[in-house]
View 1 (cartoon, helix red, strand yellow):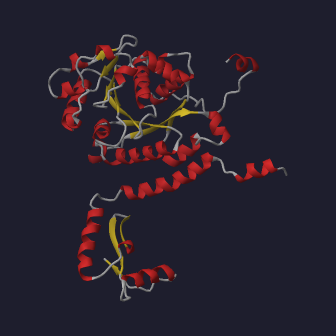
View 2 (cartoon, rainbow over the protein chains, first blue to last red):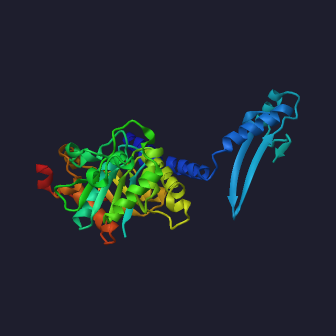
Length: 106
Length: 269
């Protein structure tokens, strides 16, 4: 096997890279498509309310809208810190495989 | 029954105007009274590509505002019988188009006996593009085999499904067609360009045709002739196939695979 073959084999054709990237991207775009325009604002306002009572990490909040057979489910996932400090909660979330912090589901 | 067709893509520079001019000219040459409307307010180009720029007096916005009537604004093509152009305005006013006005113009055109109304959409997904697609019965989505174009086409397909008259009224959805343009079979074979099957799989709409990358497109726009009228070129043949297929005639797809060229053709090309 020549050196040339080695290089030829290891390089993936750019068109198939493009296709792989697009498949992921298009799927993501499509799942966001049905979502109403108010979701970002809703998220922001809910956060403001919760932040009044609890210290929360913005990265630990997700708002999603699922549609299944004629019914829509708006899911709000917020990980509440149980450690005294936010930083500790963050650390824990990052290190522990299974997150033990309580989750508020709306 | 008149049909409204939107030529759209999301991304700019993929060949919307070239396709609109050629498809309109092709439909007219098959005997259908056809008008091509330029919706790109502020950046009108369809008149230029069709070679009628010096005959523009009134435009779409003038008609909508009641400053001119359709007979004054329509430009009759001198090469193809039954082909008309309704140019866009050069105004910078973004809100010059409104749904009510556009709807009225389309209704009047149908009343004048136009059988095909080809709407050349501006790039983007803003107001102008949405005006162009709102009343459509069919959509031809022009896509290049390239990542950003494919992604934008997918977004446009989402808009066609949601923000159009047919979607809002719950009518039969807009019929969508994929027109893959600037296609280079050689580069696909080398693995450096997305192939027809790849794009079809990603977008999931039926293929209307493949337009090969060709020098004749630039030559045609230089001289203000719709590319379909340069009958010797492969692009013209591809657009004629597209028009026939659009009209329901079965035509095998061409220009998808690399042409084998004989020794002499290679020598003298």
